[in-house]
Image 1 (cartoon, rainbow, N blue to C red):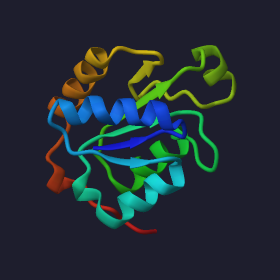
Image 2: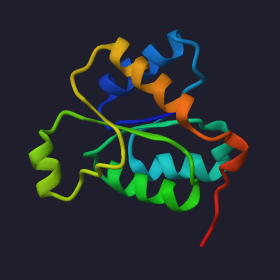
Image 3: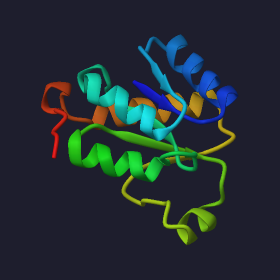
Length: 130
């Protein structure tokens, strides 16, 4: 699992919740770092939990990259911004599930379990270079 959030506190809370539930978790503080980790070893990632609004590369750019290079790798957006703001700035993607901040760890784990249950086998996910 890969947790991507520019806010250290949020990233560490999400990571801790996932680790306590038994998940292996890697962390990135922005989208470019997340893509770098995926390029190194996409097979180590079964889900990307990604903030939508971040400096350098935001969640929408990460999602677009993942869809192209790691098809089948599920993504869960997290954001504290109102949906109207995200839509107005073309950040919202209705095809990607989103969890609004603040959220309870139990809701995060529920959504993670749903996405992992519905995702294809990890061996089908490969990083392709253009």
